Image 1: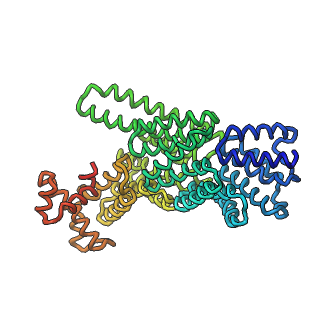
Image 2: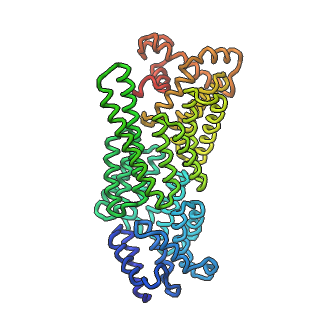
Image 3: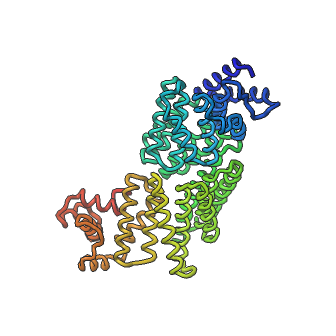
Length: 535
């Protein structure tokens, strides 16, 4: 292809990418590939625009055009042994294309090295769009590693460069990524605002993948708030958007997995109602059981479809997530062996890519399985307790490598519950109490979902259970662990105030007068224990 024609093509691809005119950009590439049909996948190494063209082809592959193999083949035009002789601008474009391939292969740390090199010389790069893309890809790498602060820094810079380059639709696509990071840090209101702004900009484009990402993000945020019907509605819209671009897009698989997850949560709600109805001998139990089984069936079907798509893309994180979600469904139904098999399969997938988030989730599921065995007195109790504690401890350690607050909180909660299930010694209960407080701090201001319910269960075990006498006896003998006097004072308040509250007819004002403390103090203690104010 003539140099002038390649330059025009490159300019068109850059403009279409910046304005998110996806169909037009893909049509340009289809025309290019028809001309290269005699030597498919190979670029002219003598053409001065070849490296830049490969870089932008990589961006378009990520947007949904064809397969990553095209970029891998194109990199063969620039073997590593010859890269030291190419121009600096070409080297930067090669690094970007190669980084995209490594992200696709889930070799995140290697990809991040490439993007870091590019950004280290960003002041030498005349193309602000390229700098914006380098920040965007860096943010994706950090997000996959659970490093949300670093990811936010890069996505903010990417947004700034894209905006300054006059590419508002590209900047809007970056807002979608930023909104998810804010959501992970507990800033749901800010996240929803950014999503709405991005949706308004991109609704006039044919960027169906990013539009699907917006709807999927809405779905996950509403799911977190317990608004499951609204979450399902947005997941279904996301599926429609993705299918406009590719019926087997990997993001479609992610949404199917999320849909299966929310259907599982709805099934759990139905099971609670079934148990309540059975206890009260109500006639609605058969209808609830039918709905429960239907939800479980749909959840498993959506997870199976997601697994098929992830298998096509060889995506470990996605495949592992499907295993974890499927494992929870088996655990809910009492099939402990299948749940354990899914947990181990997920851990193996995570271990292959050093994916701390996936490994932590897998070990957490294993911990839940072993705790169920303890409750049902299955297998040797001492050995099961050992396995449960090991899985819980490893889950906490793995989650600690990330900035995923909810994941760490869940791991801490289950470590505490496991300690309560395996030992009632005062020293161990002190440890469980510490874990409960750490988890509570991480879940501060969170909605009252299934994780919050687990936290209340742990609080009842370490505060309101049958261990009060043992704790008082330990304190009277000076056994206080590493707790300060202020912490002991708070522990004592947690013991006394709920009891007085019950004796005084659950009236905060009467408790405050009885103990000569402020009503605010009473409410704060009761709210911390999940007894008042949060309902």
